[in-house]
Amino acid sequence: MSQVSLTNVSKTFAIRVDNQMQAVHALKSVSFQVEKSEIVTLIGPSGCGKTTALRILMGLETASRGAVVVAGKTVKGCGYDRGLVFQHAELLPWLTALQNIKFGLEMKGMKGTELEDTARRYLDLVGLKDAASRRPYQLSGGMKQRVGIARALAIDPEVLLMDEPFGALDAQTRETLQAELLDIQVRTQKTIVFVTHDLDEAVLLADRIIVMRAGGIQEIITVDLPRPRGDLGMLRGSKEFAGARYTVWKALHGATH
Image (tube, rainbow, N blue to C red; front, side, top):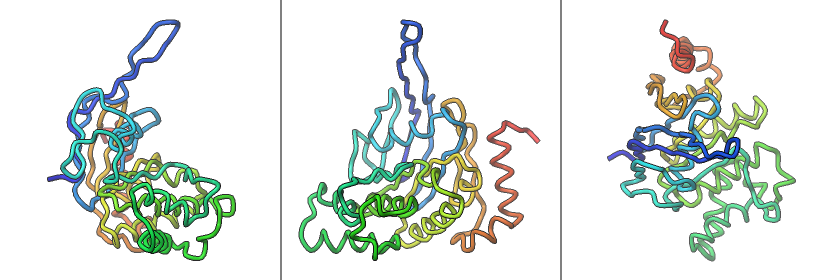
């Protein structure tokens, strides 16, 4: 059984235009599966439905039609079987890095020594052991995103959902976090669904890439690059990477040759 399954999922919004209500079809009969420990990226132009699909998976939006299943259970709202990392870290500014990680664990009912040990273990996992007492204003953009990732992982979700988590970062920090995410995935074996606008990022991270356009799936592409991915700098310069990147570029641009 697939870890994540969307079957004929559609989402329609009603908006007012010139005092008349019009239907906007954000998703149109979208179907795909994600296997356990697989990384799947969703890529496509703005407004193609990537984030809507992710929000439906998280339970923040409800599909108008279709079935959404995670770890064998139909999605009927948010749950601890899914963790979400936003484009911006969305940390609680009055809490320290460690306390931000504890917050989700406390909501889950964890207390005492287990709470403290778990939060510190995940803070260490993202390389921020020495930043436990810092508040968000004392953290760089990359450090904030690490805390966001640790907070999502700490609840031990079946699936990690990531909505352009590195999109607002500078290029160097982004490349560092891409490598760190791959390392964390190797260690935790988490299933990841990752939304991005960045073609290179999609290829570097994914086992498969879902190319979306106008609320539907244009193509699903298998990335034939070995795991673990190793040195991402060397990988970027390889002919295998160039070939995979060109295949995705063609799908994004509707090229036939």
